[in-house]
Length: 205
Length: 425
Image (cartoon, rainbow over all chains, first blue to last red; front, side, top):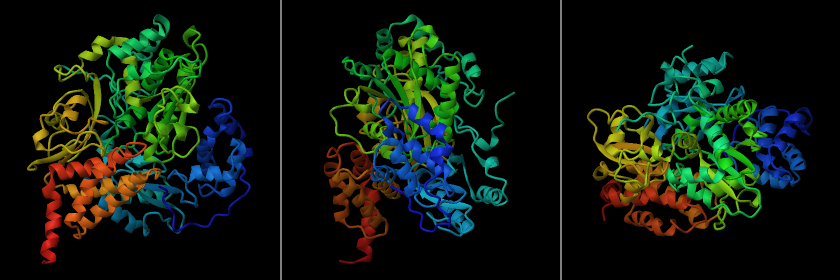
């Protein structure tokens, strides 16, 4: 179920991780969300946290060891849980993880096929790879991203960009490369009745 | 009938993530009414009488489901399924991102009705912003005394925990969801025991979908009779209420539409702007990728639980995917096969192997190498995959291919016959 990253970027792995100490309060708050003696429930939230905190945004073996310590299970157990879920990257990823919906609605019916080719071409990498400058990791997922009325849809670090075409992608990529960030292209709010994001003016004052 | 949106009222016009705006629109009145003037069992009864059918796909009456919880002193949990991942479906996403307080209110009412110890929202990992919006909604509601200790001075306590998944379709299956919430691999559990008896942490657990939970404040506010009258097909009293339809594919205005349950498939397609000019209707899937195909002979089928079931499919998540004459249904089959093959958790052999072979078979057919034997392999999946596994992912994977064979055999024949031309006997 996981997307293997084949080309990776060089990141110095710091171990043991510093987040258990740095994010002590957040870890305690996560544990407090679950009933007593149910620390195992914190495994997924802690994997998310450790991935957020590590340079390269991936889960290292030492992160899993730290989580195992906190939750009272073995490192191998955390590994078995971690490996089940596609969003936990096991190798360093780029600054922006761009996920393209490769499922039927986007890919077959709404022009996603041509878009995927265009995106791969402009980035010079295939799905599962990271650009050499470490800017973008590209994922082509078969899991529907749940925005079928807005296809083809992509996510930039889990934020949605709707109705993407080649021109919109080129502009987005320019914004990422120039350091402006993706904000201008992100979906503001899912709307009803197929209303287009790009025409939505926001809420009246 | 005249229909006013219920669950999506104000979306895009006012910022419902703001608690003041939500309250100005009548928000938290249902919670107030239930907690201060009703007995818990009266709330259950109201939901039962409203005949609120589960919106997550199965259509099981929510009130009846609530009634299954044993009274044995164990802690009870409520889990809200926000792991929306069924291809074609995106209506929960709208409710989460645009109207999160409605969900918080529904949860507190359901928790009060069922004497729940703690509530959880399991949201799919990809909806990170949605998880943040729900957490903010819970915190804002807490500041107003709608969540937390001694809610509205009634002595009722309730905490809501938002738990983010991490990318696995199968976690939408309710027992897989529970495993994932417990910090395990998201593999479905053998049933029985059902979650109502042995659920989260081994305790009685209710699992309701986001849309189901969103209906609850309105049922309490307006009464069960009001809810049962919302229908475009009064001849079928078994299905009622507002329903979000995600209409996508070959229509002019794909989108989410809140409609009374029971409109015909033809009317639903018209709501989304109809087909593109010059195209003709070929087929539709009425409830996501897991629902069997409907054909042109089904255009007058009523889009309610019974109507769609009688036509050999299921309403599912009401994600209507429309295919016109330009779509190759065999190509669609390969997408679904790839999807289920990637998302099968691998516990059960018929699913792990069956999804793999469906993918290989459709791939071969599309490459031009299919034979009559491949058609037989697809047909056999109905008995070899469906009904043979712990959960219904296997059934879901087999539904589309077997309905393709039944309703559109010519689509496959085209490929198989082409082979005969290439390789003369």
